[in-house]
Image (cartoon, rainbow, N blue to C red; front, side):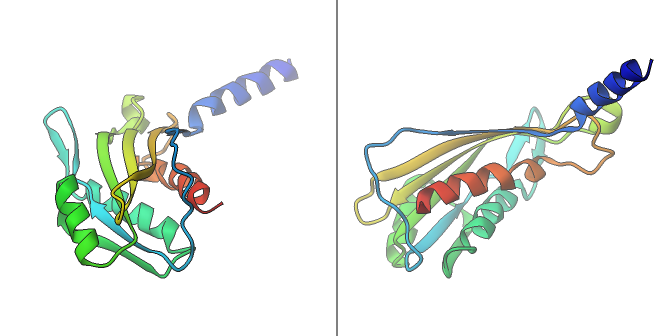
Length: 173
């Protein structure tokens, strides 16, 4: 009987865990970022799901990237407003930055998981561009899905720090 109760408790915890997936695209460029480089992070457009727009979600994504990079770099700047790719590249070049991080929210879904049993979901793309050569040195797709037992505390932005940290770490090692 104890084994059945323990198994039931453990299986109920399965829905509590968030899941993250990081898919780093293969690249022929083997450039590594070093601590003296400077980074310009484009401000992503806010995400949406259906007719619901998540104001500030683009800023949350860009700030998550900035937080991860500031552990290794001193010169990391976020754009003041969303820009198209070419405009962000021009801004980075004019600002004298070495690399452009261009994040794009592909899916952003903030659900009331605790009562709807529908998980929060997020999918973002992050492209890293060498400003001088305009070559993409790396890109990744980050997927995240919250567990079902969130007690109202999880949001899509909470699913980003771990995979973003893994991605930025790969750029330095």
